[in-house]
Image (tube, rainbow over all chains, first blue to last red; front, side, top):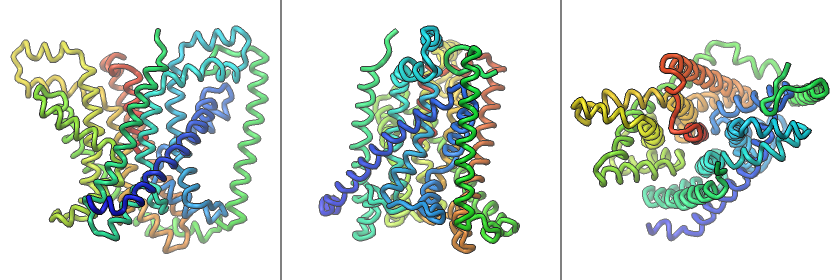
Length: 214
Length: 291
């Protein structure tokens, strides 16, 4: 493992980039997913159609294609961002579609009487969603959202195709310099485990805390 | 008449509001669409000569018969092998012997936490140094199998655990051995229940083959990249290829849905119930989101 300890600074920097990339993208994906799910359950047909189209297109396209398209294709349209910002945009656009789906299933799982009672009290659709349905929906989908977060940690490695210096990219570079693939990649693997396992545990703890007991 | 997904049917005022909101939404979407087309136009990306290559069979033959074929080949072979290894892992994890259970569990937990790209790079860059001599295709499929077996192992385990224990007990009672119980009673039912999750993992796997791009496997994305470089129409090539991916994946999902419906008809609604809707949603979400 000498190679890893020699390049420990680089690896730490890569792991930090992976963590920041994941955290930013997940925050944005939660926002986007909430908007998408709200559109998909709204009584307004064009909003439903637009959100459905977005979700179907994005989740049936490989993330690699989205990365290449955004970073190498979109500049032809004058849409150009630095590497890291591009990675955040692509990862949150992609993960947002999945968050939207998960949240929609969560909304459907909220007892129908809740929304009906809210309507009976005279709440509008927006109030109903914001004050009654969504808070309960979030609590039921903590586990699947946690699954998405862990998947996002792993998916952030694909930012390698646009040369964002995250953990996998660093491992690839260090291997290029040292030609010692086994310790280098095992080092990176340990880095990912060190992020994925605590995340999983934290999600489990959060799930137990917010679970709705009936 | 639009019935909202939450709350109950709207009254006259609600319907009027929805009509207004619809008109506004259509207007906004139309403006966005016009702006997008306008941007494409002013940047010259709608010019006929950039789309011209796609009027020739040669380009399509390259994209479909080289790119898509290689994508499907890698995904198909990897799926079959991963299904076999996944069953072995699931049985291992449910084994009576502790070391077996522990080994299978360690395998599943480790590889499920790994980014697939890291495994592909490891397979491609590290294995040749230790005398494993495969083609690029081989290294890619190997990494896909190792990773997806772990994911499918979990799916199978959920499927097996969702069965009524009475099934195994009945098989024992009529004197079937462990192997017979698994092969004749437990696995066929578990497999059938998990078909939707398995197909959605197949869609994921198919998307994952695009990571072969990184190690130079000539799959769909790489062929699009080559066409784009050759004709200087990278944007157009990528958009076309994204369309191909979407078409293939949507057809797969449609098949899955049809299987699910047929199954429900044949075995009653209970046939689909896994241990809970949440579990299925989790397996599905986690599976689909793994790229």
